[in-house]
Amino acid sequence: MDKLLMIKWDPLSVTPSDEDWMRHALALAKRAGDMGEVPVGAVLVKDDMLIAEGWNCPIGTNDPTAHAEIMALRTAGARLGNYRLVDTVLYVTLEPCVMCIGAIVHARVKRLVFGAPDAKRGAVCSALQLADAEFLNHKVEYRPGVLEEDCSCLLRQFFKERR
Image (tube, rainbow, N blue to C red; front, top):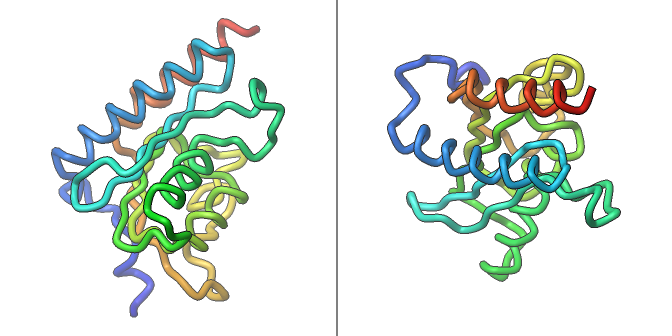
């Protein structure tokens, strides 16, 4: 398949349900922030139905892998009884890191929608472009920038209050 077809940059490709699910992920990100965690939320959907959700909790769980995406993927795998999460869409408020995009690819998530880019650690299309890496055996469609300003603002406010 042509790699360019995998990238969803066209603003018209954002559906009302993309924004609705991202709002849900934002609510989860706020929950993480209220708990003193970096405010990132994730929602996994299949056929426009909620399968799993997660929010950052590495500090509270003493688990460096407890990122929002990982928490949602773990819950979904347990709930569905399968580590392959085909035909799912993952909504995340922040561009996934190296660990998370690796897990997303291994889980065979079909589509990734994220809000804020992460210029320093984003591994989808910012600091690294792993979603487009030739060596991967599964290509994840992705759509950056959904409710980007809301997602970015939440992160900026969190770090402003911490400094």
